[in-house]
Image 1 (cartoon, rainbow, N blue to C red):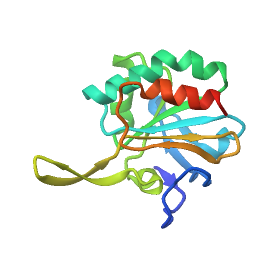
Image 2: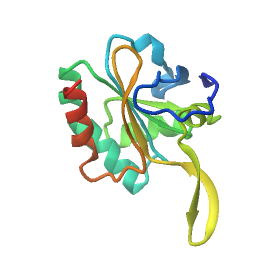
Image 3: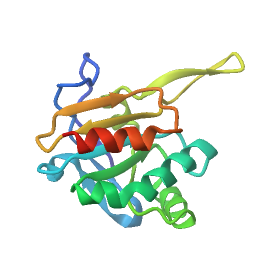
Amino acid sequence: MTTAAPATTAPVEVGSPAPDFTMPTDGGGSVTLSALRGKPVVLYFYPKDDTSGCTSEACGFRDQLPDFSAIDAVVIGVSKDSVASHDKFKAKHALTFSLAADTDGSVCEAYGTWVEKSMYGRKYMGIDRATFLIDKDGVVRNVWRKVKVTGHVAAVLKAVQAL
């Protein structure tokens, strides 16, 4: 079960406290944001396990994880996919960071990433690809919305290194 701080009317933005949450993760674990205080956290939201853009982004974070780990930063990927789906995605692409399952969408709602999208004139709800950099005190320091995968991981790493 996912638990998130209730969504506020104000969007999560730079300088605001990051909404706390507890979510199940791949491998039968769980992650609570407040338990990670003392470390920078890269929280990235992506639409769907094992799709081309999401795989490219995940593999980018996987490949740069030693650089994030060297500065004690934690990377967490979040989607509405199930833990079982995350387990398969993680194994298939040798991902080395946690994937959190926000199956009820409460964390997506709290961070403002559950949005109306449009494809070929059809409107639907989905996850807006977004990344939040949360400092060691739980304050949002950078927000990237409508992320384009190319160059994104490098930009996030640079921001974490600048903290």
